[in-house]
Image (cartoon, rainbow over all chains, first blue to last red):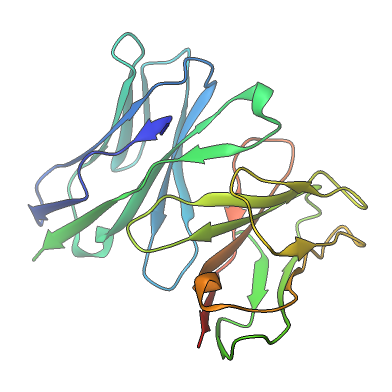
Length: 113
Length: 111
């Protein structure tokens, strides 16, 4: 059973517009949620995280929103740039999981010039 | 900037060969991880280590083995490669915080 779900395999947006990447989870024990960005043939790069006791965290162009009641989080990128084109992974972390992360399948974001 | 290295970056090898994928980190992290990822799929944890002489199997069963003799080094070995082992292998490490830092990965193709 997938504990972290990214139901949109791909998303295409125009440069300068907002990109919204969504993630749903089923494990109520997650303490933190993380977003990673991955280019082809490279390893994932940590982008931003949010504690389960927060509802928003912002870092530059990236903002993550958490809705605990809906078990849903989203990553907003504003404004989107062509260099943001990559696969974005959502991951959950539970302190009781022995430091393990649980990843979703990722969403391929394409930002068109 | 995370300093975690993996070699080789790409490997094409024949069935039945023994291979070792190298992973090293210079951040002094005690925890290290190996993930396997296929295109369009999530990262699956196959091995992890909390420190020297500590190794554990991950959530996805794997025929590979690992060792942790030094803090900075966490190699993964396949005794007899098969086409089903074709995948991308990602190494990661973490310190006191929950963020994991990833290496560039090894793309393995077994023919």
